[in-house]
Length: 164
Image 1 (spheres, rainbow, N blue to C red):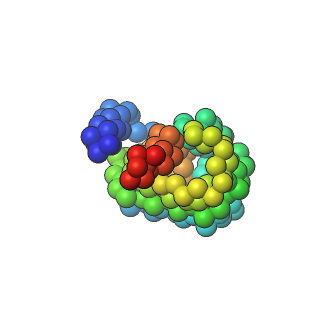
Image 2 (image 1 turned 180 degrees about the horizontal axis):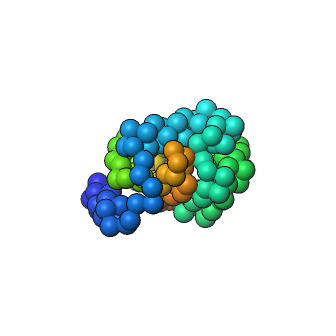
Image 3 (image 1 turned 90 degrees about the vertical axis):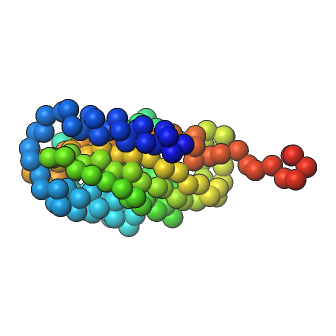
């Protein structure tokens, strides 16, 4: 798993380095905006998205098949996440910036109820890791994309000493 994460971050780093920057953003400011975005999610602060995202910003959660444009669409996605995982905690573990882009690794922990890769679950404790890439424009998020393997959040139950 560590090898996969290292490869993924290397790929993200290469993409960031090769892509032309749209507009320069101070690295400290980009980091602060990303941290504020994560905190808005952690606190279920729907209103904060209006100040952190451009009006036409795109947020994609590839594992869940979500692509929303503008804060209103992202708020609807957030409402669905809150309904299924009311106690989630999104924690940044590592990040770096390149011009107007920022890449971050993170962990996500919650108690989940709903459909999952292993079928319907109720109050199942889950945790997982992923990475995100954000592009900033005029001090706000213009594009935000999450990359993770949702199945890894739902490993099969551990077997007992009898192998069952």
